[in-house]
Length: 249
Image (tube, rainbow, N blue to C red; front, side, top):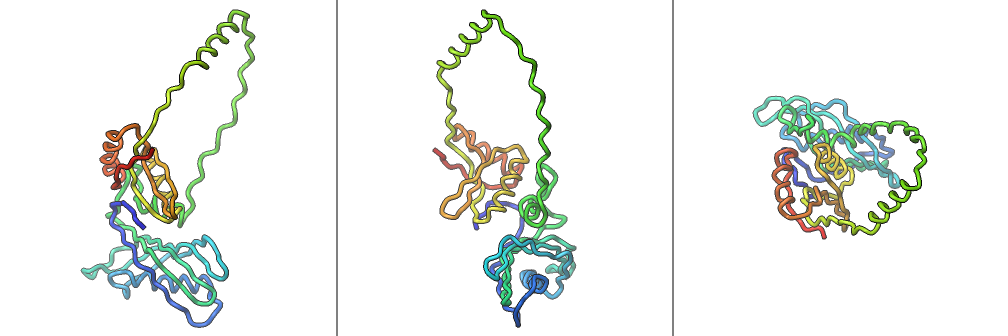
């Protein structure tokens, strides 16, 4: 996965283990998953966990796939505990005893990068929508009653018809947008959606494309290259994102 995000997070490689016996339950797999997350820390033996749970996303045969979420506290290189910080990891297990953990992402705690909405990037991109549900949009207001019907005179009807004819024959102005800023390329659709929503929350126009199994997140499009170039600085300041300009004919 390629991801152009500045906050200091880390991703561990795939860790696989096999549990003895069979008919592994989710609770058994989660307990083992904690040990596997601990193995990615600087001092695995000091790791303490709380509120650890799995969010199941799909089941294929006897294999269960989803994310492992929770909080972990461990010692740093100076020997002091860092305090409890949230983590998210891709997680899977099978009834036959195989458990897998990959892409462990750890929140920065008190040093977390904060966006303009007052939320940490970890919270917006990794936690909300995966470990806890994203809030549903506000309900639409009831439709307003139709205004009373007004009867036009013959002269008013002729004027309205003439105006409609002029509008119909006038050439349409088409604004062609040819440039955009690509800020991410990934294979996880949930992360792509979370990133797109975080960008939109700061007032940017964002969209995604999918090609060859890769999901790309863009800001734009813009009518000219200069507008796209100027947006790179705003994204770096407001969203802590790095991107590059591409042509999107």
